[in-house]
Amino acid sequence: MAQKLAIRSIVVCGPSGVGKGTLINMLQEKYSTNFAFTVSHTTRKPRNGEVNGVDYHFVTKEAIEQGIEQGEFIEHAHVHANIYGTSFEAVSAVVRTNKLCILDLDINGVKQLKARDFPGRFLFVNPPSIEELERRLRGRGTESEEQMKVRLAVAKDEIAYAHTEEDPFDRILTNGESREITFQKLCVQVEEWFPELQQSPEEMEHVMEKN
Image 1 (cartoon, rainbow, N blue to C red):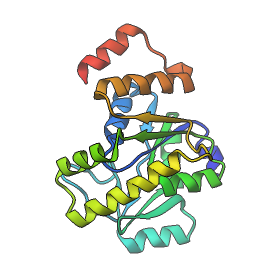
Image 2: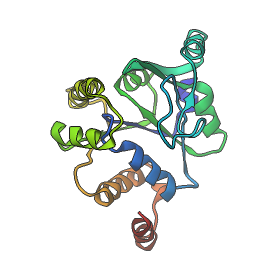
Image 3: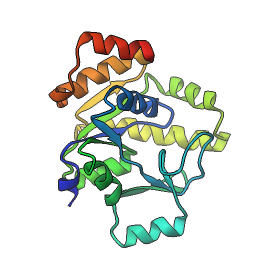
Image 4: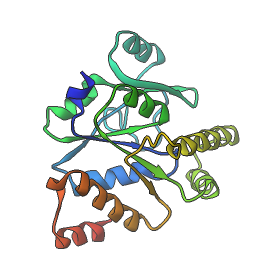
C-alpha cells in the first residue's frame, strides 16, 4: 500500500530548528502546482500561528494510539514526550491531487519508511554545527532549558544516523549559508530528481526576489 501511495515523494528530515520547515514552505511556493505537503498528526499543542489541518492534525493521545493500533499510519514516533504520525489517508489526500508528496519526518519515521522500502527521495537538512543549531533553537524562545537539552541530544543522534555507512539519505544539504543559497541548492536537487519541475532562469530569479 505504501509504495502505491508514495511513488513520487520527497521525505525531508532534520533536527528541530534546522530550518527544514522554511525550506518546505519555499518549495511549496515555488512549485505550487507540483508539490503538496502531507499533513502529519501530532499530540503536541499548536504553536503560535499553527493551524489545525494545515500544519498538523492536532489530536489526542488516545485518538492517535487507536489509529496506530488499527494500522492507519504509515509511520509514527514518540518525540519529545509527544506522538507524531503520518496516516495513509494524509498521503492519499495528496495523491488524489496528482501532486508530489512532501513528508516532514524525524529519524524514527525515516527508518520506518526505509523498512517498508518506501520509494521516495530522502533529504536530510543538516545544521552547520550543533552550536549554531542551539543558537537558532534559543532564538525561537519556545523551549524550556530541559526541552533544549532533549532537542540537542536528539539532534546529535539524528546527525550521526544521517552520516552512517548505511547512507540512508539521497542528499544531505547543510543549511549553513543564507536561506536563498540553501534554497537554490535545494531547487537544483529536486529538479534533478524530478526534471518536469525545471523552470527558466527568469522564473527562478523572480522566486528568489520574493523570498
